Image (tube, rainbow, N blue to C red; front, top):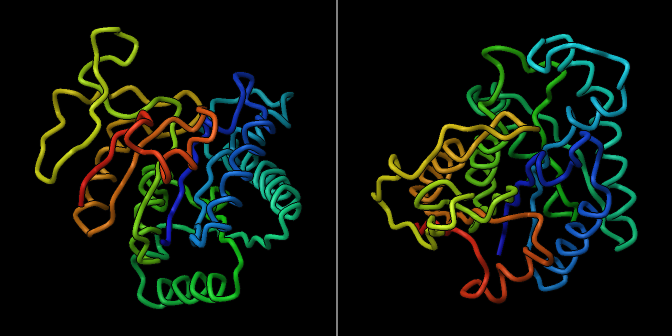
Length: 254
């Protein structure tokens, strides 16, 4: 199976914005395991801006400012990809960085070039690590968030599954912090989620559950099954593939 895995900023970073290397290492272990089982993996990873922000602690600006976002991304992306390179190297897995913009999915020539890049990497057993190029993606060039990007990548690469890892188990019938709220395990095509979704966005990234559900619905409608799960749970990727019935998650049926 070809699987696109999106890891959100809240999974990869600690409360102070620094990279959670222990969590990152655990997820790399699991991805290596999936590859050993014969699966192809494409990784869409957030965390560059948060990583850069923790590295440049003396800078005091709002995260939304364009100049700060570009600066933090330039520093943080180098730190992030270097960490992935070293962790995957322990398993003999070569990785390649793909920094993209929205233009690459709308312009015919740019789209074709990116498709070819991904195709060549997969054919040569190189694991693509994709992120938005935040150093040049500003205003109208920006994706809504990496949830949107992961859905586009899953469709571009004709993945059979998209796994979106967040810091909660999935979509609930109410506020996840409310004990009365229940996790929705499966969502059939056409099911409306307006009453369940909250607008609150994540603390480290730009997205929220509204974004994730929209992307999941669009991606599932393209014939790709989508799972939203908690990336902070131990061995979450292995459990999703081998014991999904007993693993908390929300699955969008295609």
